[in-house]
Structures are given as C-alpha cells and as structure tokens.
Length: 179
View 1 (cartoon, rainbow, N blue to C red):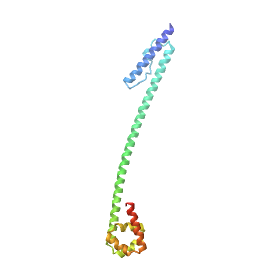
View 2 (view 1 turned 45 degrees about the vertical axis):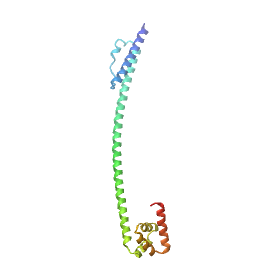
View 3 (view 1 turned 135 degrees about the vertical axis):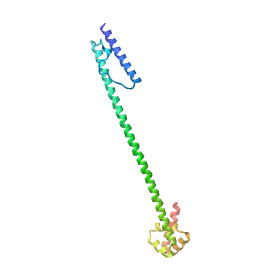
C-alpha cells in the first residue's frame, strides 16, 4: 500500500513538472519557486517525493539563471552589433572621403600634365628637344605623345636620331599597350 502512495506522489510531481514546463511555453518568464510547493503538503513523509520536488526546484533555479545569462548575452551581442555597425559606417565614409581625395588628386595630376603639355607645345622645338633628351625616355615619350602632332614632329626633328628612335619606340609601345 505504501508503494502505491509513493508511486502516486511521484506521478503527481511529474504531472506538476510537466504543467510547469507547459506554462513556460505560454508565459516565457520562468521563475523558480524557492518555497515548497503546495503539492507536497501531506507528502513530506515520502523522501522520494521531497527529493524529486527539491531537484525540480533546483533545476528551475538553474533554468532561471541560464535565461538571465542568455538575456545578458543577447544585450552584449546587440551592443557589439551596434558598435560594428557604427564602425562600418565610419569606414564607409572614410572610404568615400578617400575616393573623393584620390579623384581630386587624379584630376589635379591630369590638370598638371595638361599644363605641362601646353608648355611644351608653346616652346621652340630646339629648346623642347634639349629638355626632353635630358628626361627619362618613357616620360619624354609620354610628353611627345601628348603634344600637338605638328609640335611633336618639330621637336623630334631637333633630337639626335638615336634618341629620337628610342623615344619613338617608347611612344609606339605605349600606344600598343592601350594607354
């Protein structure tokens, strides 16, 4: 007869635990009961039921702690995500500013080269030839390729034939490369 009561008390405790677990699905706030459950009234003389109730209570407390830890981690992740988004936006704006600066620098460089070409176009061919022969051949060829064709022809005519051949070869290779 005593085993029947023990079995019934265990079944009642399991039923209560299942109901408690179901209530967690309905209401997500899980709170552990530190006090003894009214379900155990009259069952305090059954040590197995008391041990089971105590185990369930401790597990409830552990679940509460785990949920609190998850909430804390969720908040930490949200804060980290916000920091990452802020940093990403800062990097995007820095990249855009760098692109703008590079564009301005490139435009300034192109403008400077255009002025340099205009200077060579305006120079006398003999003076331009003297200066171009002192420059590195690839740079001199770049200038000759960009000056007006008539001015370029007059300048090349003033250069030593050996150097003129080198400059012309550089100009041809530049055009073949697609620059």
